[in-house]
Length: 606
Ligand code: F6R
Image (tube, rainbow, N blue to C red; front, side):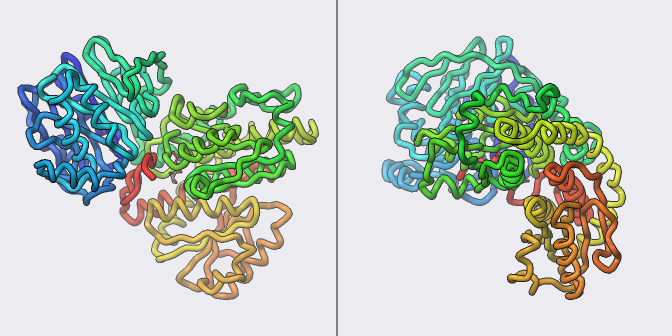
């Protein structure tokens, strides 16, 4: 959510900043700006996309120090003035910021009483004024930044430059990510490695409460009370190619299409055919410890939460250990009871979602044991957890999550297999699940081949103002994820209900204008689901059935038939056509598929 990029070195900063912002645009895209230091600060910022900013930056915008930002508005509407960077009144200090300064109003009143004149409505401008005042009373920029941040309540990832010190940039983190990129006699910083991989794969992640000074020839990190910290650089696996559309029209279609490979990567090296178990070295749990957990509690936000619902079902079915999932955003605020014999599992593609991170921190504070199922290596949630499973799905750029969703469900299948086999899952059932997992990539490939059929259905159904998604037990999280995908990228209203609940209220909505997508796997609940379809049809509702067999025309007028796997693993496959349905509906309606309105990838604010 919002993107930061910073550069100091011998090259001109502007093209590097613009390129970095382009890579970060998926994190926020209502306005963008850059500032470069060269005998004073040169600033350009515009409402709109990074391409609009690039058009507004003159060719001669020279200077080897600069910071840039792409914004997702929190304080103040998207506009030229509210775009970052923000400067103090004397145009000496420039700041870009992700996060929210909670006491911004209070600080603003105090600064105004002291003569400061504000240009924007943003909380960030407060930081520029505070640092500009502090820099006159301190010997270094880092001291000034530390001093200013001491009066701030809230979350931030910031980059700061000072026109009078054109050889350095100071960055700081509290709740919003900052990554330093180490170059050859040049240094970079960004809120996300996506902006860095074109220039370097050597990175250092700042921890909350840490700051860093970057100069062309090196960097040093320290804490808010000026204690120097030592950092080991990490090598990032992903390169610039991972961030291209790879010839696809949209990142979303690329990411949906990558799933045979990304699922295979999540599975690679993790299935043991000798004992029919999962190899999950990163869990940091002995079999004895695993057996001692009497419950599993899963937390995540949005689609991550829905994949957690699939995970909870898998864990209960394969190990008979009670498991449930809850939105991390709710969990963290309800003073959760944290039990020593519950295993907590936090899910996050980005590893930076603030609500999930805060929930993990709350759990850790209360002594809970937390595993992370995370895609981004070295991210805040991954570092905070006691162990976990990396997805290895590669960077997900499109705002709507697809390949991370399926890989998370696959990671849960592995975790459930692990749990099951240290409890009472038989070797034969273990083998059945291992074989089912191995079939997934090819079966996903077969579903992707139905792209044209699904696109035609999407064009037909996208003309409706609203759609219902229903599923029962294993199918319910699939229905929720299907509705989520449709509404977030096509803006067609979609509701998801357990099929069993239809009669208790939502059936009143059913009619010719409200078609239903019904998730109907061939499992022990098939007959019950078919009865529900009959009830919908009797009320004049159209039905698109997603399942394993071609339905009777009386029960559903359209169908998407997917290959059958083991009943426990079927939800993973049933999700894929719903991703394509949402994608093609969004395209048919002319939506901005990869950057849906009002949303941003990686929600690093509350
Ligand atoms: C939906 C979507 C969001 C994310 C949620 C959590 O398509 O992308 O609902 O799933 O914001 O994000 P992560 O997984 O990065 O924590």
